[in-house]
Image (cartoon, rainbow, N blue to C red; front, top):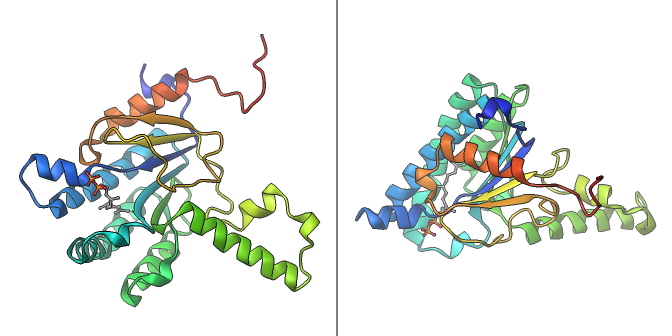
Length: 240
Ligand code: FPP
């Protein structure tokens, strides 16, 4: 089935995995895998925009990724620095709005400034919204949201009885963004790894064995075809 005849999911979320193994299989340093991983992200942003996907969220760096070697973390920060500028060019060219989710205060000031510029300079774009999750953890996001709701309760702005699912969703980093319809994870792993724990409640999951640097438009279309074959009921019963 071609993408034109398919029902394109509104929001696609991706756990990109396998950069390290991609590099090892080629006898290259892990950083080479991350560089190729960044290239694949860039390509996927363009592909998603062309396919008419409205929201694309990728998991680029988790709250747990700080445990990697100092050398790898530092190389990743350098790559993010470079890509923050590169993504600005890609976003402008493709009418993409870019937003970061996660806890940004842990990053060096110049990287925070680059991310802020990327968000501000693309805020008026009307095509795909690209969210990249860095220093992101689903539980951490929920804790931060609950703290803010708690503070609002303490100030008398909200009553505990008025806290609904919508109130919680509005305090998450993804406030205003519809929940993902489709989650893709590469490299054969089948875990959530603390990604969008609240938002993925009703998503369809697609797992592929290929490593993230090899992910391409064909693979994205394959995931969409899989999504089209699913029967989404949100806990209800399908009409017969
Ligand atoms: C996944 O492979 C890699 C990461 C989770 C960290 C780095 C992500 C990128 C470089 C993508 C860049 C994103 C943007 C927004 C530009 P892994 O290292 O976990 O692979 P392995 O499991 O094979 O070791």
